[in-house]
Image 1 (tube, rainbow, N blue to C red):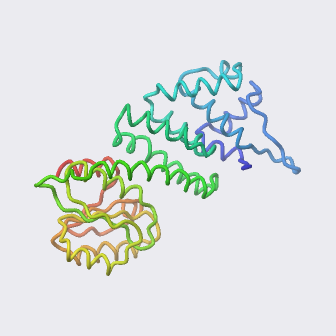
Image 2: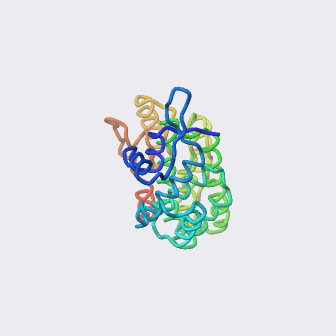
Image 3: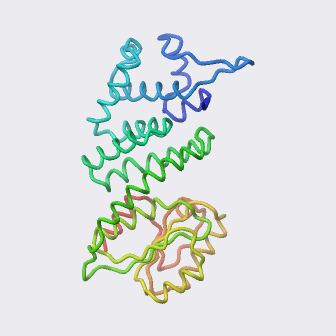
Length: 294
């Protein structure tokens, strides 16, 4: 069983610690446990309950009304809202609840409903990536375990693999040639997989090399395939100087190709010098716009 501080609950649910204390005192909404040294803590069940309360409260239901509901009624109302809600913020919280419960069926249901309603691309941009950003915050604060992250990222990767496979044979005659890869030490693949899907859906030819590719291997594939565009994502594993060296090296190695780079390390790099043939993509939506503009 995991335990959470009131600060953890604030980070995960978005409800201020001060508000949580008021709810505890005024409505007896939740009762924290105490350690032997009288430090308050919350359990997995408490977290799921507060996430449910947050979803209902954000949907316009007063906290006094929620406090009068039975726990089962609260759960049923949340499921109903999730099934009918067009609010991505509410769905992000529902995904968080499914993640903490390791509930694969519920996670897949939420994604499937969103994809049916909004399409895969908007679901990824407005639901999945904001959710992944929240996971990153929770990881930094120590509020989630590695198992939670692996559980979720593997489910999302499975969805993208299926969507990518469905684009087989979709390459159009005038499509551009793309080479997609992640450099050595970069494990975060979902952003690149999504770019792979968007490119194939629009009829472009893609060679996808995946994670952890040594530069010399990349050089060999590039010289053989001769892509017009190269796409990579830098999220972790490099300091600012190494990022600059990577950008310079890839630009010098293939001056005829257009290089599209994205990810936290390039977007937030202080004083990154961007060569002429390199374009820094600042968001997933901007990546979609860049692809649509080809």
